[in-house]
Image (cartoon, rainbow, N blue to C red; front, side, top):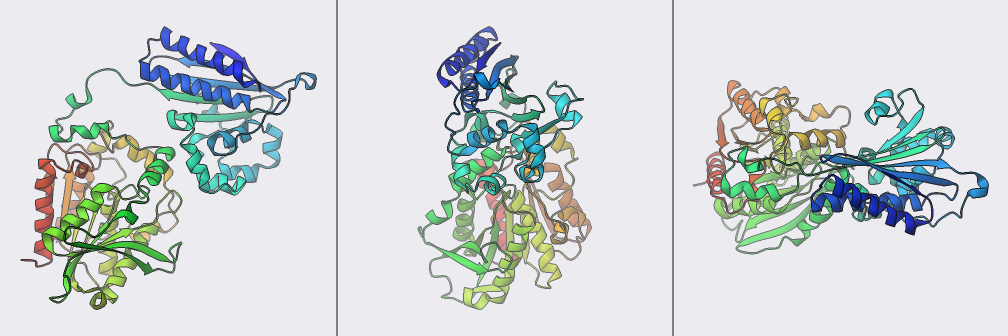
Length: 512
């Protein structure tokens, strides 16, 4: 199924919609999948409408009930047939795709170093074979995986507005594989949209606690687009945290020479009246999110629960996020915050001998790393709490191979996170992979795992490794749970886990 498209948008768009509707009918797609395909075909036709007047394309749709590929083949037309150049889109993904599609092979070749900054590279045989193209041909390729605001900012100086525009792009939102190939005699855009998998209900496969099955409704974040959308959605939450219910909330800025802003932001949660009776114990809380997602509502609830039930002060770090910033920056920032607490304990009203660290997921990585860094500084933590942590066992565990389709976070999304996040040389110096480091002389540890979590087995293994090295370890293997089950705020299983967490904090910080 194919149609001709050029800079005259109207007729091409209508034809693209009719073609998508015909495909949906012939393949008996669901209403939702049919709508997604129609939107993708419509936007691809719009892209064709923004081509140079010297170019025209052929739009086609192929695939089956599992997914469909919309393909736009672009060639130059004779000068006498060329139409006027259309108005370009103002920004976002559409503008950047259009920029590449209007470049010839020779133009890219002449400016290859600059265009490599936005992810354009020489295509290998494998790139071509994967798309069913002639593997012996010469081409440049750009993929949607290479899209990020910083790379295009360097080319068009569009700053973060680029990311805001991405939310209006169907092609960025719906596709799981977007590629542009530029050959010597033509260019080709391919966009694949996956369809919903049919079959058994997901809840039948795993014995997930009934109170947690609601988490299936939460989209599994695994693309740059989704990461940026979460950043935009939750990035302002720290500014909305206010004092209430007997808990005082303040925003602090800790000086830090290597931090991009020159300081590290954190929220300080303290019980009303704290400091009246001397120095209080403290918990340093580092939120999870694959080092790229901001703190979400359950992290703030966790901070308040610790304050309310233990009387501790909680220092909640707001570390810089990837993929804009590379690892190990968040760990270095956490170390600097801890050093600040140790150096200024009296002024902050805390007992520096009674500080525990706590984190979930990648925050668990940071907590484990901080325990080692504090040991090396001879200012040991009083305790460490690792909640469903990632601790660096190269993702070869049984749970990593098994849990590819569980809610919230699964093996597939973890693999994509590691393709997106950037890591600087020497990152291991800051214990980015705690399981591979020396585990001697570490403080008491609480390790909590979720039963149906791809990270489960490495958490269990790490607890065993700590114990073998003489560490006092509490391992809580929660049942019927998934990664980040804290999101189910009113569940019985979370209440039971919270009791265990709070009990450990009280024990290691000598709280009656």
